[in-house]
Length: 246
Length: 254
Image (tube, rainbow over all chains, first blue to last red; front, side, top):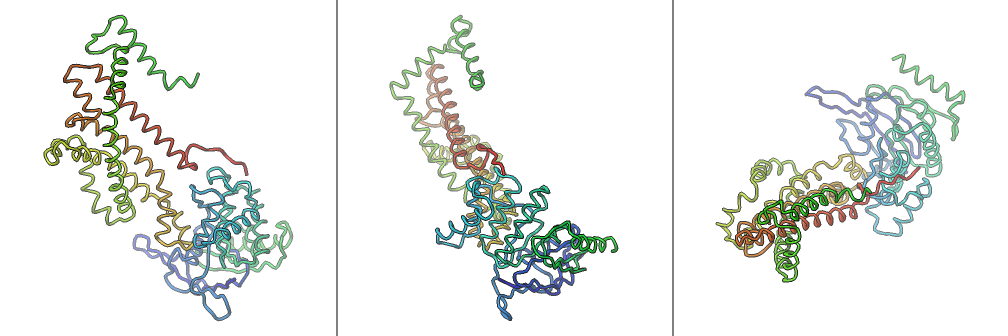
């Protein structure tokens, strides 16, 4: 379990010598065991934010701190990410792809137990011996989620993981993710461009525009939510109208 | 009837050859009849001469190929992984690549004599580039997105090499090996034509000198068939080693 404090984050790219601020003045806190959604148009810096938090990119200025116990900063936090694409290893079966995140675990039985439990939890048991080229996009993204969870991260970052899926599969996986969150209580930061998805999933929705955090909305609705409810409707209007106003 | 398609051309050539020979249409010195070639092949098999030459050629290819793999694979890794070494090696290797291995035989014979060393060098020169270049491209073209997965999961550089980059490059490396073994087979027989005391190439050149076109044809067929056999075996092995690739494309519903 972990709390994440992002403060005054700045990321500057140089495009043919010209500086471009992908992120600026980003300050927010992910409470321990909270589910936060970030929503924004494409190109607003959402992906960059996640890549900085999980260490794939360097920040220009600012800090990202992981706090395990109050007042104690964690130096090697377990952060993992589910990418937009499944990014499975094509030469490994579904089962081996899940075990891929357990490279440091030498206890074979422990690896097998962990992998088995996630195969069960995500309904992948029948496909355990299939290769990524043999399963559908929805299944593949489910395997990617399983791989991330097998890693047992304190913080899970998700970068539009359901963006490429059809509406039915997406809705199904959103529900599964809510169930997982309720049973495992990881800290989740979920990035999406889909306002409905953000409202359906997040306890808080952070709205980003042009590299800045421009709005924060709390969603005080119990899970599982009804996306057609009045409350959801008003939240959606509030967020969307903000984009039209600006 | 689909099974017959791969053999159709062979059957047609055989038919034309047989009918032409039976009707005495060909000069039997230039094109010996199929039955004569078959008889010669039988004699060469029975006397053991054919197998002796085959064994010599095979031995050379296996040793030469093993040496090549030991050179080309590590160099391919180095050059594929490291941009600096790529810029150092690219130009000189491109120079060597454009010289046909057989063109170097005269100087190799001067340096190493007509012993095994010159023939092994020809094999190494022939097989090096397909193995080296395919290793380089396999390693260098590994999807950076997969490498990022390793980084996020805390893989050290060595683990990333062994568990991501090498498996990702594996199909390409196998293609290189398959091309390499074919090239070395062809180059070897060429080298044996120029300087050897045994081997299939030598058998052919010796037969030419004693005016035995039937033995030449037996030699040519043996070389072609063995090359084909090696390639088929290699392909089988590739498919076995890479069940995720090509072969089994069954789609599991989900």
